[in-house]
Length: 84
Length: 157
Image 1 (cartoon, one colour):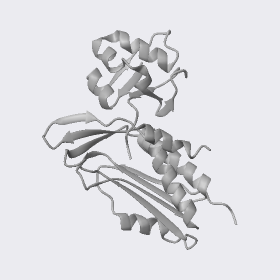
Image 2: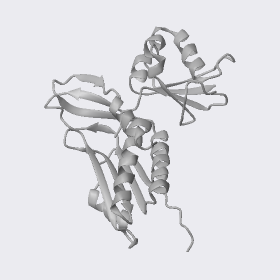
Image 3: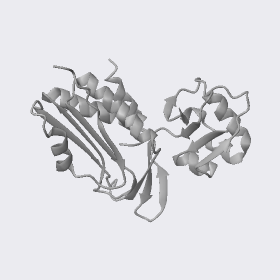
Image 4: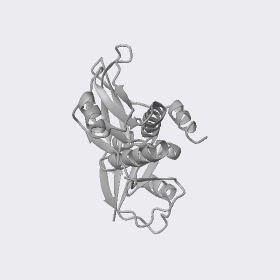
């Protein structure tokens, strides 16, 4: 099981802050993960309809969409950051 | 003399911070410091439209990212000290959001260090702002600005 954590409008649109899911073997990269999540329901499809606007962190470190996510304990998905 | 690795002081907290106290802490016992630059980011009211900002963050990662950026700034500009404090939760216009203090032997390194940390913090530290309007309605999430990405490019020349 992999823990997924959502923030800001990604969290609001999916309707939960976190969940544990079993990822199929076909999910290799961060982009694969986004594509997979979009098949889980309308709320995921809405939240992730513009993948280029989604940032991904594996074990609390930023990754690009083409990077592998194998062995991740925790994956964060969120919009571009607006702190400061 | 052995080189001492200086670690940034990073805090992510709900409470406000005390600027003078943080300046005292960073400069205490370091007579080699000749320049301290502080940057304070405040919540603005957007011309009366905004009642408050709600700041959300990724606990753990927020601290880790700011520490990473702070350590880079210390190494790149040979800083004597670096403090970064970022608040979360509901923040009203006029209240503090973020504090960055860079201490160095000379002013240019301190200016550059503070500016560098703010530029990277805005685009890499996992914080998000939601607007609450003066009309009592929860508004939109603040969008990331292209200008913030452009600001990063001056550090990669």
